[in-house]
Length: 611
Image 1 (cartoon, rainbow, N blue to C red):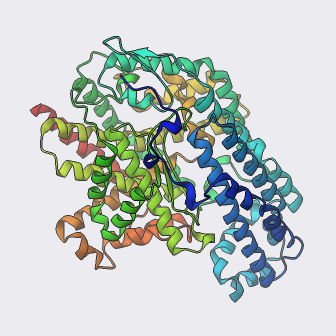
Image 2: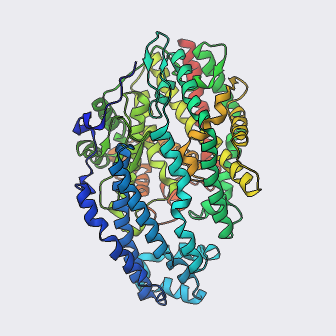
């Protein structure tokens, strides 16, 4: 039986993040907020004046200063809002800075079209001028976008619709995190348990099948009651994205999303092809799960259940910290010292509280330390969540300390690499220090679940997005029935004949917030594949020569990986990964990751014979 959620002020301060590296108070936020109009005006003053390298450099510098200020303000407001989504003062901060952000984007939207209206030879001369050395890559990306940039008036108009385009996501977030209430449920002993967005997956990982099923029915009852609203909100996001792609003369909304990172469509399509080619291994895992659970029928509420039902290891937050520090040992002392400082200096908002945003994320700015939101409940999955988000935070920390602000932000395509490397290091550490069969099976279960959730499941999501956007581009309505049929068919394809398709499963798409960030989810699968290759190489070095010896070699896997963490957004993401030692322009890393999944499954099957 889970404990009732506390109010935020009932959580001990040591387990709440310290936002003072951003702003010491809301009053300090207001002081910076008052500077925004001046910063916006500084950039806007260059309208009609971008004719040479000197003016472009001055405009870019002013724009960077504006971006830094907006980032600080926006991040603080978002973190405050996520602490308690019911708090009106935090919501007001967020709404005000969001409105000012849209105003800033509108007032400064002239830069790209004005520059790209210049003759080709003038642009080349500006790019090659010594004054633009600090923005050379920025200019290269700008030149690539020339065919898809509108006139200054059109860009300004499009920018003014920023809040409108974001509204569907805001509606869905508020519905999921603040407004939806789920029926309480009982476990096999009749004990009552609350169901919430933040507790749902934890309930699905319970060894109590009665509790799992009851929570599943309650949770999706809530979503089915609001399915028309979710279809309208998601449809709004898709249609907005499709309309913008058409206005910018892209072949599709997917092409527009991938162009920003210069990732070819073949990377997306070959991912889906490789995963579909390996669906028989997934079916084998589903069948193995059914046998291990000892059930006649495998339902969707069984797909997260622990394979060793009587093993329910719980960790305190302090034990989780110690475990994480040991797991990241192969990355060296310097890396570990920063993580140790993160725990000490309260980068992390640890426990759930009433109104707190669900899930987990890493955030922060160029001026602040990173921040991690989680909803720690003590499970191994939550330990994995912390080390995962710490990977994001360490990627940001290294980028911010090694790149100028214009290149500090890494692209989404590489965003999940560092987080997943950390997760893999944790699982390997635990496996290396666990011989007891049931405990080892629990770890293999976690490893297999990571693969299932990040490669198979995210690729299934990628197929859903590709098809949903294609439907909108073809003029087909995105009704609840159409979206449910699309999603349900994919679940059947990916999980195979052993899964019983409860009718609730088809509306699961409605609870996936990443769908409101079009064509994001496939990057989890490609990043995971890259992370498998990187973590395997790092661990091999640690075993064979030791971490310190490996760190002394500039060509070692660990040194190349740590170099990758410093690159931020200073080059195209595929090129950054090549520096790390992975080439995702070929399908080989994905195939290798799927091969690793098969080998872990084989070990689990063999271990099952001993249990």
